[in-house]
Image (cartoon, rainbow, N blue to C red):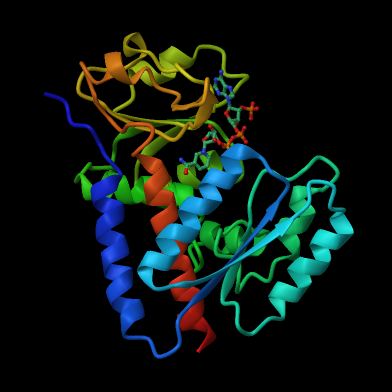
Length: 276
Ligand SMILES: NC(=O)c1ccc[n+]([C@@H]2O[C@H](COP(=O)([O-])OP(=O)(O)OC[C@H]3O[C@@H](n4cnc5c(N)ncnc54)[C@H](OP(=O)(O)O)[C@@H]3O)[C@@H](O)[C@H]2O)c1
């Protein structure tokens, strides 16, 4: 009765659109991914990104670095990629080993090649409403909401999580679309008070099972961004099996994940267009 807000259909549609666009390009967009260390989850995400990029016609390069790589060595590679005219956009897969300051690395990326949209320059452009690469996961959530025709204007939306790459930019994108946004985080006193009244909930805490059916208004829309590996399986933040009995809900896996990848590839295609 309630809809499963799958990310598969909207991401397939976007990838098809991009594939057609890339087919017409004389020079193909080129994405590089830097992977430091061998975090199993990161390896899976990177594999997916490369796979989808390739099927869209985007050229790919994977630069793997040892887990003991120093910050200086990584910054040197970032500098190389910034100056490599064959690479149109690149990302440094997060998380990074603890000896590396992730913020410093992100800031070293040339904003014109920052297809994750994480540099302060691109974030700042987004906040003041200038054209930029939107961060992939928040933009992916927006695409899912739009694909399913979910009205945002005037709606009460609770975003759980306030990270720089998901919660904060997402809250802003929702605000730009005239929603009334509440941002919750680990110090929020009564989370369910904020979720029970919400027309839409976006959960991005990385805490499996955090959002239960009791916390959700009947008929609401729930987007689950959370991805945590539990016993080798990917788990969202939402108790999907029970929540789907009273609200529309995106699944994990198969929800925001595929959308994030498709938006990233779209950013690479744009980076190529911008470079012309
Ligand atoms: N599907 C995808 O493509 C995709 C992409 C990116 C991220 N993710 C997933 O999305 C989740 C969030 O990612 P992130 O990078 O934003 O993580 P993060 O940097 O760890 O941020 C988590 C946020 O959740 C808040 N939080 C933690 N426990 C909470 C609780 N019990 N109640 C309310 N808020 C709580 C934290 O609050 P404080 O700020 O107070 O610490 C923080 O703001 C993770 O599971 C990640 O794997 C998925």
